[in-house]
Figure: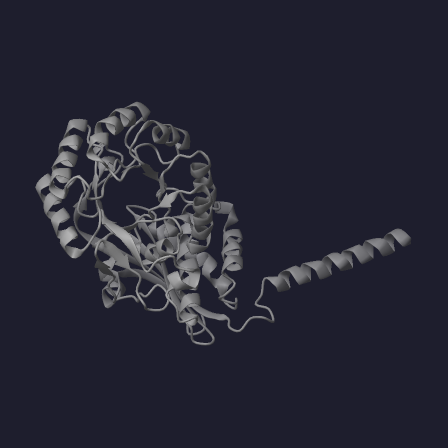
Length: 405
């Protein structure tokens, strides 16, 4: 009898505990608003022409001709709204969109300020496909939209909401220096970037014949002068011995950094290069989780870490990577997505860079201001962006959840 009574009590307590746990997943008494709708869209941005880097020259990828964007637009019962995006190059865009469609209904009714809890809830909703990669890149669009919404509600630029160290961030251009671009065009593009106010130039390397790389770098360095910031990017196409040889040959050009000389997951190899070469090492853009960046930082593999908010799962995990980098004293130069990364770089303590790509400008109604080598944090609330009619025209799929759909 007593055993039966104890079992019944235990079952009741378990049931009550489960109810309390489930209640904790809903917006609570402290909530002042709830998410009422989520709209997702998949848009494909065509590039002006095919673009190639070293991955194309080695036969591992085809030239890049378009970029797929997953947009999330979130609205609350109080009428607040936020927008976020993720992206994929060559493949993966439809997969991100499909996963986002599966999990987006789970945010309806949530308090939009509970961003960390919502991120975790969405990760567990798709836990069977992992906690990094495509699954969290789908979450990224929603997570970024929530941070945009939160900053808009505070009537602050996102950088100011996070706590900015600066109102403008040194910026460098990448889009003018691909291997599919002739060296004369690279020089012309570099001049145009500098005239626009950009403070650094990055060009691609990784030719099968390193002598071609050295000639291109020498030409651009001669054009820029000895002290103007110049970066090079090998896009992971060297092995360790080739990277050492190329890295030593490149040292005479006073580079700001040598980017992705090795496979993105070779933390040990990057650490050896960082210890061997005078040129700083930069990498990290291909990593898709906090844990992968933690290993890169732990191994002292980088002088410049290059996380990408849409790739790591949004701003919520990106902030964790920032904290790790600051603790280790590592500089940061986030990859791509300047509309997002400008705000995050402004809130990073240790002298960052932000990457300039004009490719995304047609997607938004607003433009970022560049002057004196720096990209200026806009005074618009949130990320300070809104989708253009062109972005709507490039949309190939869309889905809505919650009220109004």
